[in-house]
Length: 241
Image (tube, rainbow, N blue to C red; front, side, top):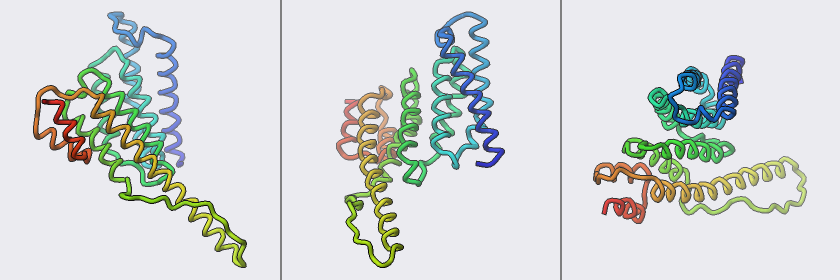
């Protein structure tokens, strides 16, 4: 991590830490109130997070999990802010930033990033009225589609328990061990991708409120973005029957 990136990282850490400490110790900041003092402090917190967004962006792509965790923490705080107009504006900016970024290709990073990104998406979808915006639902569907695009069709586990007699060339043993370790990682990633795909797709289709008015273009866009199966498309259409 470069010195400039480290400085930005520390700045964001201090802002998020300060906001979390104050908001967690003052429940009034989580409640709707007409108190000028509380509203002013809430506004300051929202503005602090808004100012920190460029620093958070610098964490990508070198620190993808850290980037997503800070984004999630910022959204968690904004979701409880009393100044809804400004908070929602900043939340939408974070949504755009997070959703436009693809998952890392590094298999050691992808699973943790998937989990944090979905948790962030879920905070948004739990906000009243958020899922009424069809474009936001399509954004969430694209995330499901991205997970599905990383699943290898008919994948068979490649890792195995090695039983190697020490040959004359230790380099061969090292190569076999390293290759098997990579295969085991891929096995785990593929298994977890299938699990997360099932969990998140079912959550999105089964638990998230959809716009009440039927829109065939939206259904098509959502289905294509999420790479829905035939049965899932029927489940989606059934919401409007």
